[in-house]
Image (cartoon, rainbow, N blue to C red; front, side, top):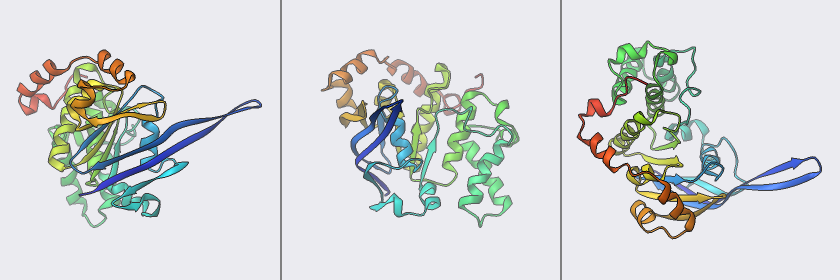
Length: 278
């Protein structure tokens, strides 16, 4: 079992405007633990520090203070390629995260070539098709030959999820993975992520501003406000018995997706997992 441990993480930025200088504490003393086979939701409004935490975990930025450990070792001491094989990310915008000049097959083949150099071209081809089937894009041969502009928004995000799964990670960071998608297909993509999390026993950090989906797709919820985690606990406890006033306001404003989820669960897997129109 892999464990990602965040200890007293701080990230500050120097803001200058003419002769004035301010220090912005984007992340302010945040600690949590993410294990394989668990989903932790990081919830808060824009600017609360959620995406900054994702960037720090992925080593796209360096923390000002604090530490990030993967399996009890500082990520600064780990080989970057090996670390990113184990910790992958699904980005918010599927329109920007895929190169429009390359086919779907290229996007999935590339991480296989990087992380599994001993695979033959034929083996990689078979793995690409298997990945597309895993995210309910079939016939896989047809989707493999397409370019991103030939796909719907939901289909592009499924390709992005397949690409993140290609290195066989143990931790997945999903940063607002459905916020750029049409409302009608968001639950299908989230249902796919939830199923893959269970089947692959992934540890998932689900970053969102939507408290309703966080409750239904997460084991734990952390609520962020102005860089701090102001509430953290089991998902139902945080939603049903919020302590902080900000959490109460978020819960009151969140729609209730239970009816839609019940409808989704009644659908066959093939219907629940696809989105042909968008």
